Image (cartoon, protein in one colour):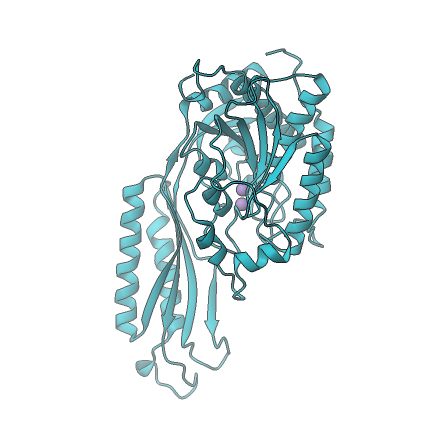
Length: 420
Ligand code: HGY
Ligand code: MN
Ligand code: MN
């Protein structure tokens, strides 16, 4: 790999700022929830950049968008990169966006240098990776890979009862590209770490070996509303009290183990009035663990606690599954290639696993895949203060460039991504 093969850092940084301005929040940060008007504007901007780069752009019925650069042996499966451009409601401008824009920068660098590759290259953004508005997360990648039906995805509804199908149509993002999409030869995703490790250890690059398991549930508790002043405590069936106990339990279950995390992100009280005992509460529980058996055990412990607490309070409940992903291990060959190119570039790096879910773990079910992490300052993400230093953004894109070129020049039948 020629020593001077580098991306144009300033050009990448400018694109990140430009895309970050779409859905920008007044106090900083970005809000482009899936299939909102802002998401639609971000999509249009990235598609415009794809077209300017001469990519053949396709979009499927869930709005997954892939730009393709022909290879010398264009019949061979492509090497793909990509991520997502939808954000949480209080997001930053790097989560997901970096991976997509760095992919476009790789293409532009190769175009500038007149470099061709044996295999075609593809850069994509997958719909609704966050899952914050419509569960599950990684929805676009699931449909693209055939692991979720289009119908099931389109039937997912948000808190206002709007379905994915309606929201997609409202921003005119229904395409006709084939579903499932073609399985890539290999997939590499550049992403911010969103955790504290690289920043604390003052390292430049993470070569990601695995992603932990994810369990999202929504619990609905049904109690009896009553007067806050007249109803004796012994007579209460307080759905709000049960939700509080469950919230405490989630912290108790996870705080002593470095391998597990638990989050109660949503609690909706009804009727949500100061002087009425709540008769209904919806709450979400996000449990994650690096080990599948431990995650199953945690789900069982939680369910038993919920049932016992409801029983004691005279409250009933239901639980709905919002998302469930087993831990995923990336291709050691692709991970090794990432580490090799980081070393070649003189970048400090380490192997590490991911706390966050990513599109790569879904694509990686059917082809060799890997991820490149760059540091998140103070480990903050899903927060408008999310920040990654410019030199790290550029370093990550350089590693992506070289990793993609290496994979794209693997001959058919010869050394393959999975067995480098
Ligand atoms: O929840 C996650 O891990 C990802 O941000 N969708
Ligand atoms: Mn992300
Ligand atoms: Mn995210």
